[in-house]
Every structure is written in C-alpha cells, then in structure tokens.
Image (tube, rainbow, N blue to C red):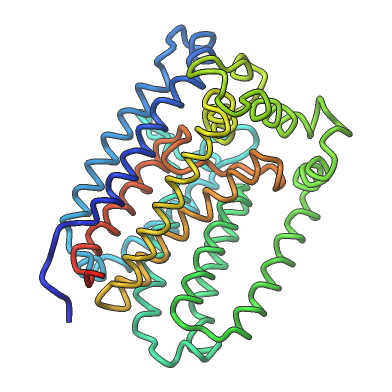
Length: 367
C-alpha cells in the first residue's frame, strides 16, 4: 500500500538542474567555434540544446505529476512502438545515416533516435514484469528468460545501426534490474560471462571496432588515425591541470578534438574547468545515483523500486562508459554523457526518466 503523497526529492531535483545547467554552458563553450565555422552562428548548437532542455523539463514536470502506477497500461503499446521505430530506422528511406551509422529518423525539424525511447520503454517493461514474479525470479526459465529474449532482440537491432555502446548500456541496465529483483547469483554470473563473450565477439567481428580496441591498448601506434580521439582527449584533460584554462579558453575545441560537444564534451570540461571542475561534475553524478537508489530502496512497491533502480542505473552506467572513454580507460564508443552532451532525443528521454523517479519519490517512506 502506497503512502500519502509528499514533496518530490528536492536534492535529486536540484542535482539534475545543476547538471543540466553545466551541460548547457559546456555545449556552448565547446561548440561555439565549430558552429561559427560551419553555420556562421556560434549559438547554433546552444539554441537547439536549450530548446530540447526546455522540452525535456516540460516532460520531466509532466511525468513528475503523472502517477507512475498509470504507466502500466501504456507499457505494451510503447514497447511495440519502440520496436517498430527500431526497425524503421534501419530502412534507408527512413533512417538517416551519419558517419556510417543509421541511428536517427529525420523528422524535418529534429533528428529522432529510437534507441533512446526503447531504453526507457524496456526499463518500464522489465520493471513491471519482474515486480509480479515474486519467488519465480529465482527460476531462469520463468523469471529471466522472457526478458532476456526481449532485451536480446532490442540489443541486436541496435547493434545493426551499428551502436555497440547503447546496446551495452541497455543490457547492463537490465542486468542490474535482475540483481535488484533478487535473481540468483549463479544465473547473474552466467549472464555476465555470456555478456562479456558477446561484447568480445562484437568487437572481433567488426573491423572498425577491433581497430578502436587496438587503439585503446596503444593509441600512440596510430596517432593520426584510430588513436587520434584518445590522444586529443587526454591532451585536453592534461592541459586543464588542477584549476583549468578557464571557461571558454579550450584549445582542443578548435577542430582538434572530434565530437567535442557530444561524446567527448567531458574532455572540454576537464580542460576548461580543470580537475576540480571535472571532479565536481563527477560528484554531481554520484549524488544523483545516491538519491536515485535511495528512492528505489524506499519505494512502497516493487514496480516503483525496480523502475527507479533501472532508470538510475541506466544513466549511471552511461555516464561511467562516457567518462571511461574520455579518460582512455575504455575503447572509444559513441555514448553521450547524460545531461551534459549535445543531443536532443537523449536529453528529452533522460529528463522524462527523471520525472518518473521524482514521481516515485513522492510515495517513498521517509528515512
């Protein structure tokens, strides 16, 4: 039985607003030169990101006041819609190809990434299903297998785009939800081993991924080719030192560091704001994870608990992968930094997920 509603978690709300504010400032700082060269307008990406942030905030406030229990009746239709869009984006007449990847649908006024919708749809679907399993979660066939099949289908379609990073985030998030639901450690260990093998196979069978992996091991071997991203990113982080070069003073954003306003924006944060500034951003993400998991633990029902845990862990895992890539701790993969990187669809659905967590927090038990 759920308790009487109370105010949403203010610390989580404030943390998200701070991350979003940092993101808007850094998108402008990182992209001003590129957009001036390409479009003759240094505010080109900033204005679009600001618009998406406003739309995302509207979605967040809507979901904050939309009883998460009522989401259950919409789970089936939106999951079907997500798979239809994943199929549509692979079609040349519908999907938009950028740098060899077909991840977006061009709607004219915006580029829509179906994978972002599918991530939050599957989190809701799995949370709803697992919340009804009870002790059946201990059974691999009855508790885990149905959701593994749906997850595998979605991950496979995302890999065809190709987008290994998003597929890993999706599978990792569902894995954490299995753990939170009480699945057997033996089953989880087996799934982890299979997941590692699947990722290794995906890297080995795709030449460009294999090249990126080898560049991760030794970026200096091909400094002007596959190792270029990592080297320039480390240059940016190293140049920032303790206090940074100052906001807007990045040198790497002058067409040296590729994707400096999207996948590698954290390198610009480190260059301009230094170790202290980058650490504060990391601290904000840690605070977000703490509040999100606290809401999951104090949720009055299994559905709300798993839903909060899934959304929180998905954002945390994506942040960890992005920062790992930027710091040279992981091979390069195209995963944006939540709240910070430029990207409308990702920001919209991330903030929508935050709205759901804030709604769940209104029914939690105070501790």
